[in-house]
Structure formats: structure tokens, C-alpha cells
Image (cartoon, rainbow, N blue to C red; front, top):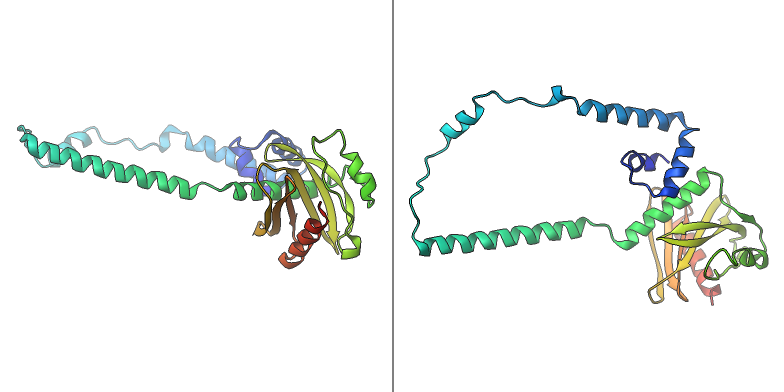
Length: 246
């Protein structure tokens, strides 16, 4: 939740995350104090006393220190050359600025990684991992009928070392999603599933905030597994799910 504090303070959280964070504030004095401190800083920075007031003669001093400019008409040929050079420099500057914005913009995969990690963390902290608790995939899968516009694949991988705990409804990438919950020893695995608009893609991995993520596309579905489990075992889990998915 502490990772969401700045986004909440700047009013940038989605409605679901905002509601969860406000509920968290009622139970967490540390985050409440941090939020109050940030509010005090914002108010203090608006104080007019913090604004520098230049002396009245500063503008005149600057003007007098500048070299005298010859404002006589410039021959038209030289003027054209100057304007062409200026246009090239402006074009280079705009291109560099645009390229910088593109390089800084997070990719869709980065955004989804942040979103699924936040959902995983929220489910753990809010103690809301399961809407249906069952190790029987034949009970969990029908539970999603009528709640989602797709049928998530549900498999109990207990024999492979990844038993099913149940599932819940979630929301990822602007879609209602199924969240299937598995575990490996004491490590919780959230498997988020929602419709994909892209073709099948192999398993890839990434990491952040102390979590590992394995993600892939198969059968018209996005599948993202998030856990603090080590990356090798999480990849193995993803492969077991992929093999079991029709």
C-alpha cells in the first residue's frame, strides 16, 4: 500500500485502488501520517513568502549588460540561410524531444506488470484472496459462469506441486478478470486471466517490487502469474498451466 501512497496523493489511482487505499488508511497510522506530512508540504510550498522577489532595477541591469544589437535590415539571401538553419535546428529539437518521450513512456507490458503486482499485493494485504475457496476445479470453474464473459481454464496442479486454493473476481487492463489462487509451499501465486486481442505468445518473465511474473497468451486469453516464488519455479508453474490449457 505504501507504493500506492504517492499516486493516491496525486489523485491518479483507479477507483478500485483508491477505495482499497482509503480503507487501508483507516487501519494504518503510518500511511496516514505520511499522507498528512505530504499535504503539509504541499500547503507550505504555496506560501508567497517562498517566492523570490527580484529587485526593481534587475531588468534594467540585465538589459544594460547585453551587447548592442545591430537592427539594420539583413540582406535577403543571408536571412533565408538563417531561417533555414533555424528550421533544421528546431526540427532536430522536436525530434529529440519526441524520441525522449517515447523512450520514457512505459510499454504495455510494463504497465500490466505494475497493475498485476498491485492487484496481487492488494489481495494479500486486504485478506481478500478468495471469493470461492475450493481445491476442486469442477467447483471453481462453474463459479465464474455468469460473472465473466469468458470461461477461464481452471486446473488443480496439486500432483505437480502447485495445488489450487480457489479463485476470485478481479479487474486487469480494463477488463473483468479471473484470479486463480495457487500455492507452492508458503508462497501464494495469483494467476490473472482475461481475454486477449493478440495471438498466442510464449512464456516470458519479468520482476519488480520483490515479485516475479510469468506471462503468456494462449487460446485468446492473457495469463499473468505473480508471486514471490523464485523465478525458476514460477516459470515451471506457468509451463504446467500452459500444458493443461486447451
